[in-house]
Image (cartoon, rainbow over all chains, first blue to last red; front, side):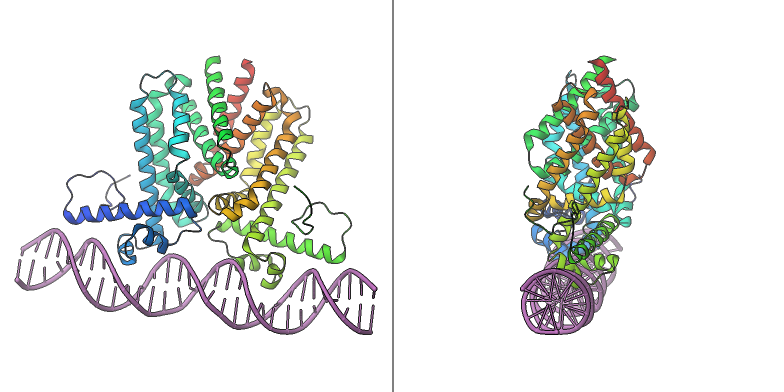
Length: 213
Length: 213
DNA sequence: GACAAAACAATATGATCGTATTGTTTTATG
DNA sequence: CATAAAACAATACGATCATATTGTTTTGTC
């Protein structure tokens, strides 16, 4: 969790020198391009050269900031996960004191997060990491932080729907995993209405279970 | 849905000539090797050469049966989905008249299906197909048949847990997608006990909702 | 048993992969 | 402003990719 590694992916931004500014901007630009290519062509179909062209930078520039492909993928994952956390922070303030917060979080996270190219890119990275030990080692801790971050953000907002924190986390996990699987399975068939119906069924199920208690 | 294409992946086996037998055996052998490599190395890390070596066949033999990589991947997907359907047919007869059939189906499909190398291979194919239009066209109808097949097999067995067929299908979809997402997300972290807990939470949620009605 | 087609095999080919190498420009520091 | 390091750029390299090509062996049909 330590922040020793100074020139990691875009984090906070306190008083940067011109060089650091340039570097951060370049890294962000490359990560965005990488995410775009990953979402469009998948991990298998994305090469360094493609990212270079999409970002409109030289190969040398990319290599300077990301010596290996794993470095690039790791930074891209960090960028994407960071943006997701930001989204959850925003939705939290938006839905404060909304009685149907859970339903809103689920529906909106589906529309604004999971069906997004950004999440498609993240999915590619996660699946690639499954069968690549060195990449998995890099990604796993960031993914864990992401999950913990979401749970921390949602804790207060969604307290009413579960009997304890553990159950709430389980519900959040199921929702998150369901949406990912929905993309992989039914997303392949392209029936968006059907997917929305599944989300609604899920919301109904949780609501029904909560009412029972 | 027509069966015109005679020499597709291993289907039924009614009276084959020696040539057809050899062919089917070779195709099965190659598909098994492909699944093994996909599960171990992912789509991105699996090459034709690797499959050739894993199956211990010549490149020419593979090319004869699968002219392109997409042909191989399609046949492998069909093989894997077919095995999955077979599993559901077996579990159906095993759990007939079991009052806790739903919980058993969920828990056992997690252990015996989703956490299996075979499903890892299928996951690789599904994700790859997301960003590969031609592959998606080949896979999508087979995936749809698979989903429909599961729903058909489970219809009678799991009738009690839902108020109608539509809700039952939604529950099956959520369960299936959740397990897939669980592999992609929490599977990366390797905490198997946590994943089993999530499955149990899901079973409890559905049971609670069913009891309410 | 002759002939054709299917099955299997070995090697070649052009493209593309990730990375290494080497050079030039820009920025920070004394 | 001198010097070193960071940032950016261009080209090269060996490996590997999917597939094409050209052969040989096995099987089915007449």
